[in-house]
Image (cartoon, rainbow over all chains, first blue to last red; front, top):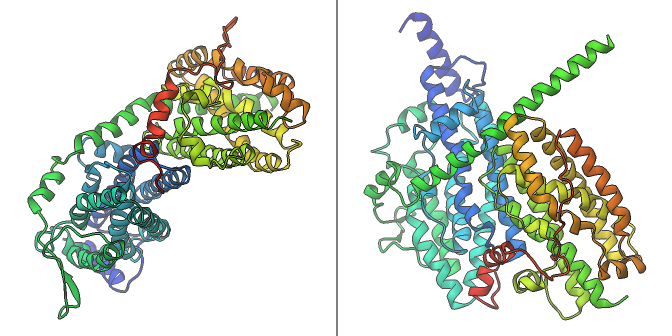
Amino acid sequence: MDPKQKALAEQFQARIDADEKIEPKDWMPDAYRKTLIRQISQHAHSEVVGMLPEGNWVTRAPSLRRKVALLAKIQDEAGHGLYLYGAAETLGIDREELLEELHTGKAKYSSIFNYPSLSWADMGAIGWLVDGAAIMNQVMLTRTSYGPYARAMVRICKEESFHQRQGYEILLTLCRGTEAQKQMAQDSLNRWWWPSLMMFGPSDEASTHTQQSMDWRIKRKTNDELRQQFVDATVPQADFLGLTVPDPDLKWNEARGHYDFGEIDWAEFWNVVKGNGPCNRQRMQARIKAHEEGAWVREAAMAYAEKRQKRQEERKAAVA
Amino acid sequence: MPHSAFFEYLLRLGDNALILGHRLSEWCGHGPILEQDIAMTNIALDQVGQARSLLQYAGQVEGKGRTEDQLAYLRDVGDYRNVLLVEQPNGDFAHTITRQFLFDAFNYFQFEALKQSSDEHLRAIAAKSFKEIAYHLRYSSEWMIRLGDGTEESHQRMQAALEDLWMFSGELTEVTEVDELMLETGVAPDLRSIKKLYDEKVAAIVQEATLVLPADTWMQSGGKTGQMHSEHLGFILAELQFVQRAYPGMEW
């Protein structure tokens, strides 16, 4: 590394170590920029793909009040997608390129959305567990070193914690309802529990990005720390619902002050990441279809804007 | 004023909002641009919200203790009172926008007038809803123009949508017995004067969008009287009502 680069890199790390925020126009190592683009875009894509399993129940929501709440939640997620694409764009990449990476499979999104939503209870479980897991990660990210990302997270976290309570309340209603409703809630927890734990990513030993991201203070807690935090917060909530967490090894460890829990099925985790989940193909097809079928709309909007501008200029010229 | 006619009238208002809101909500997550996904969800939210107020009130007026959800989830096709236009499928974005515009232009003048309704509760609902509807009309009008006057392809798609949907526009301002009764009691405006405003607004926007209104179109009606809905409504209700029908009598 040439001395000038080296000095810049040292200066950069010193700023990080002093907990200063890095802003778009600041010098940053290429790898830092790339890591952030990868992570922020992955996050944005997750918001957008995440609209699909919930959108799947919008037309079947069991009451008008629930329908409105679900629509509003999904709309929030689309909004999160927008801020996050915006945050990624501050790093010098545009949304069109990011979408291209998503559609060609180059960019990833959270694997959790490759699981199907099969019952109304899933709208509860997704809010409670999936948003709950996301919050663990996002609260940490409100203190991430890149300014625009941290600020987007502050806004997002407020809405996500509302979503989580809303999801929990859906399940609470079911658990206080009939046997059939309680069964629906239990079945949903059975299907979403393990994929939710997988949302924190590979274990610390297997995670390739963790150490560097910690050094750059992009991440401030490891995957396993966040996962433990999630389990500790969520198990008492399941107890309160009267539901059983589908893990025979789950038990409170007095000495550690944490819950011990069973081993995640890492073969399933990697398999879904590789594209072999129950809905990977369908999720991507849905996104690509929306994008391709929307192409004429985007082109028309652009063409109209150009026409309008031209007409305005002609009018101005005529007046002048 | 006969109670049953007022109930019927409120169902028309509520069902229009509910079914169009439902149709728009089908787009959720599949919009052509993320911003438009959000905008359509926004309109869907307004409309389902309006449906709730209107159906709640309808239940109250009926006096049989039916709630908004019982009215939405437990009536079959023959008891729905929405116009045919709103139950038409989304089709492409051109069809969705055209359907929205043809409805919004009517709904705008209808709700503007309902702000002066002789019924106090309806007046209050109208005052709140009108602000939302004014935004809907602005949104759908802008997209009519943008797509009509956009590219060759978008123009053709919009013209095709107008030709498919125009036949359902007549019902909006068709005067039925219920409308006459509402007019007599000052609950609702004269649809004949609304028709005049509607025709002018539609003609102006269609012209600016460089589109042509189909001439001599047969106007199909039957939705708001419940005489004859299209085949689409049954499928909408099959989805909308699935959980309530499969698990009857439960709280959600």
